[in-house]
Amino acid sequence: MSTFNLPDLGEGLQDAEILEWVINEGDAVEVDQLVLVVETAKAVVELPSPEKTTISKFSVRVGDTVNVGQALFEYSSESTLQPQVEKPLLSQAKKQSESVSVVGVLPSANEKNDDLYESFSFNSVGEVNEGQPVVKKRRSNDKMLAPPNVLALAKKLGLQDVLLDHEYGGLTQKDLVAIYQKRHEKTTRNDVPELRNKIIKLSGARKVMAQSMTKSHQHIPSVTLFDDANIQHWDKGVDITLKLIESIIEATRKVPLLNAWFDEENLSVQLFDDVNLGVAVNAKDGLFVPVIRKVQAMPNDTVREVLDELIEGVNHRTIKAQKLLGATISLSNFGTLSGRYATPIIVPPQVAIVGIGKIKQQPVVKNGQLAVGRVMPISLSFDHRAASGADASSFMQAMIQCLEK
Image 1 (cartoon, helix red, strand yellow):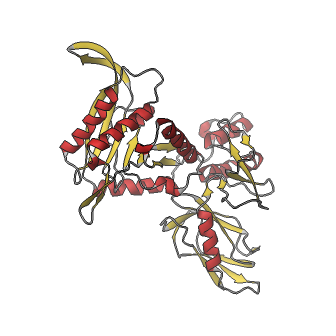
Image 2 (cartoon, one colour):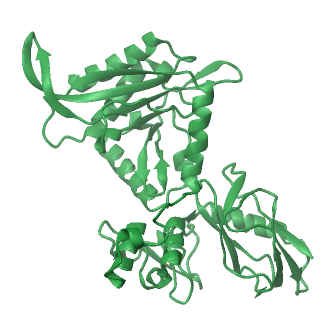
Image 3 (cartoon, helix red, strand yellow):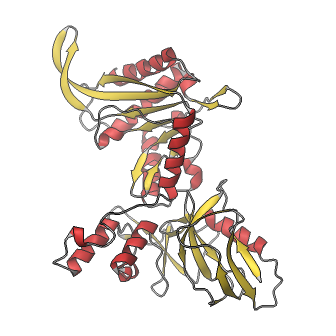
């Protein structure tokens, strides 16, 4: 009897949540046949059988969180292969973890043909772009792997056929509810199973966010400054995000102490010449903060292209884990939804995060006269161990001057 343990899935990830057992105890499986699906903080990973064998016993259940090295299942060998199968499986799992997403598997550069998958990418209106192997979808004779929340609701509503019939490119829980209600015309939203008195167990990105926010609250003495910038003079249709990025770059030049990491153990601050800007993106699976690296060296057109690619990667869960790491300062433009001021939470080891509220027209005093202004609320949270109030105030002032010039 052999035991298959959760392998190291890369990116320093130490645990994963069991999403789905694809087979049952007692089933005979072939080499590399899919056995179970797990979700890490960064991606969904499919784990195959190490050899031709019979699955004897599951060691964990759906919903369990397991650590690297913990037993997943027991199996008995039916082949003449050497029993040392952990290493090749480990390398295979690592390879998968470098290129998986919630909607499927991303092909590597040297991956040409595959007996199990067909390749698709989707344009802005959800149509298939041929010849662009970006997102991989299972063939119709195999089971579709949708995002965990969509897959779970589909099972509750009995709509697994919808996932098989649709070329998955963004089907949401809301879409499933609409399909369910259409099939049951007299059913109201309150009658839909699993939407009443719902308890949601945090997993994936939401679980990591909760852990990160807890750590920040416990360890960082955060202070937040609030101020406004009058952007009445901006041309109509100007790209507000690019303007904000410009102002943050300018402020980091004048006050580099806020473009930094704080080392709590050694009580030291690491300053950076490059501005690796984390931009908060709200997605259906949680909050993600992809990073625009060396943003200070990019022309505006390039910044916009890179940002759009990152946002698309987040929304389709195709973004690589490396794109979410290494931010030296962050921006949260929560005002696109609602709210004027906030106390944005700093993600360690960063020293600062800028929050932008909802822009409104309101009276302002300009040259001693009342005028109509277009006011942008700014919130700046900073780690008071690394920077003083004067440092943060200077940073805020530099941002406002850049925005108002």
